[in-house]
Image 1: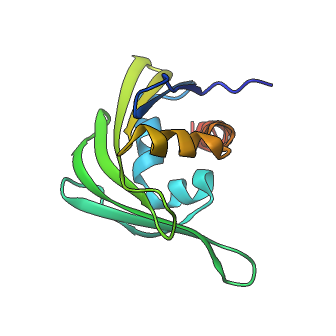
Image 2: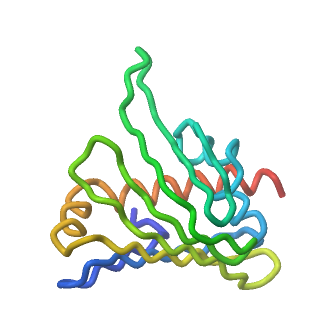
Length: 155
């Protein structure tokens, strides 16, 4: 089954464009990216820190059942315009991937639907291509499906 999240990775470019239309009002889609309890539900990460404001920051992690850290990420939030966009960095700790720059744009389509447009810029084409070798596309599709299912219960 093909996912609803569209990932466009044009050859020879150091960016990925991600688009997903949700059956959610833009306010709820935006909330899914800015409220710690919701992020934890759909991303499956524990939110250690979340300052959703211009010049804010965040830090997420996932641990296994024995308490060992499996994944940790952090970033700086450069700009936040409620229900419109977030500009932030994203860094996976303890990996070979350098910091990425992410632009998240939240677009209302009509009162019960909205679109997320993400642009992720990598330091190099090689870094971008290495990210795509991971189960990145499947992972973001699964996460967005969880987001849709969790948030629509709030309607």
